[in-house]
Image 1 (cartoon, rainbow, N blue to C red):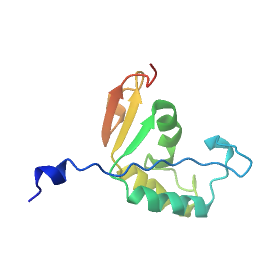
Image 2 (cartoon, rainbow, N blue to C red):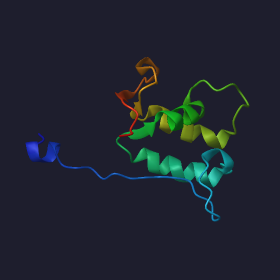
Image 3 (cartoon, rainbow, N blue to C red):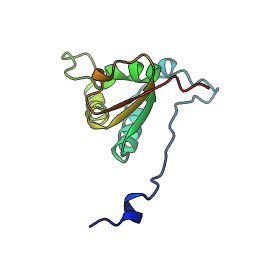
Image 4 (cartoon, rainbow, N blue to C red):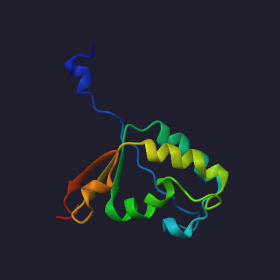
Length: 113
């Protein structure tokens, strides 16, 4: 049985971003190789949930939405796709339709003050 103190214990928050050695952090400009996917699959498997803004959610959505057409992505991407698809996701957005989230919730707002 879980006590009230255990249930309200703050969990670690992990932040992840891809940055090249020359400082580029444009997710679309960084080559996504097998090692990078393996690293992120291991990190995602430890997460209780994922937090996205709408733009990043929409960019990443194609990476996990099954079924992917045969041959559309390398076999080494499949563990990443299955892991991120199974994860609970929270998206902060004023524009995303809440029905698009199968495993998670949409927090209304722009994230700006």
